[in-house]
Length: 529
Image 1 (cartoon, rainbow, N blue to C red):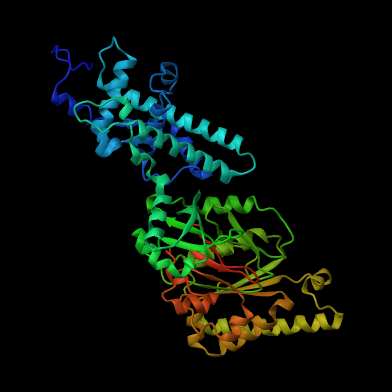
Image 2: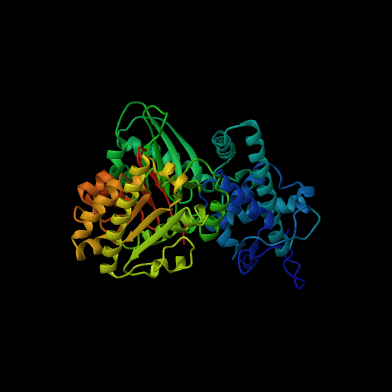
């Protein structure tokens, strides 16, 4: 029983019952914190909204696996602080009374001859949290060993083990009697709700009369939980996007649907998590990705974003051969552009390989590159008249290079560089619409540059907030087949940029769709720079 205080022989009172659940913080060990971070990174865990979801998952697992009475394991818990939860009620939410009864009974059984104090209760919570986390990590190691060669299958086995345990415990449980609660009534199904998103998807498809063969959890992405759905017969789920969002009770920007390669009647569905659960990638992560880049046959390697699993996406600007980028205000376009340029400078930094020009009326977004050795003199250019003057100079240089190549009988720019090592010239134009609006001649100059520049080592990166026929003409669209669209305002702007709708439904905040020449459209994020 509980020891109330030194001034009474009573073993319990109502006031003490509430005191046990207030005014004392709960701490995890550093190890249990690290285990959650590792399982998150692997993609084995469902989306846990907060620290107390992780705490109750670990404690539930420890108790279900009968570790709550293993004194040896409990005493081995290191006395260090990881996560912090403000109180008992915060940790256990609406089930705090049930959890107090369960934990108290476990403690009374563990120490039958001891008067239990409030400190004992909170220490026991930390111990269970730690033991449960350690056992979950051991479970993951077993799943990985059993499913060697397939992380996806290992993750499925890990999730299924937890779901099976939950179902088994639910079957053994009796209806909760508030006057008499025992350990056998540890159901706590809310801990496993995150594994049941597939059930919500199934209910949504049933309500829309969409026949489903299977729904499988794939992974936890940077912002989205990813599922694979296989239908029993063909239906175009992409066209039913808004209906599916409505059936799930979600807005149109929080659900993404795309075909699943290699699966008949298959689709991948990404469901957005709350923003506080997003896994961000910042300047340090970009620098690490660039350091780890493995040289290949790319002539002008460039990083164009991160996939949902957090892996950097590298492409060859030489193949592009030009890139068009669009995105509305606050879509994350500026951060995306800075990431592109940083990767370009870093991965092509031998001093002679590239020269970069930046035409930016605002100028402020690219101040960080002013000291790059591969930046051309007097850059960035912010005066629109000087921008047009520079572009005309590029036409002259392009014609000069073409003439030199013809005289040598060389048609390939890479071969020409072996005898005349002139640098590739990358021209970055930020806010193309403003430049075109000021001087209509710009469009004609750009059309000619994009048509012939690749032959002579010129590559353009064109950026604008609004994609329309005025600043991205039909001729430019033909000459610039590689496109990147952040969130745009309308479906028409998306079709102008990508030839298909969809970018208008992006979340923003760095999300973008990439249409690289000769490849299907892919979804990516930007580094948070």
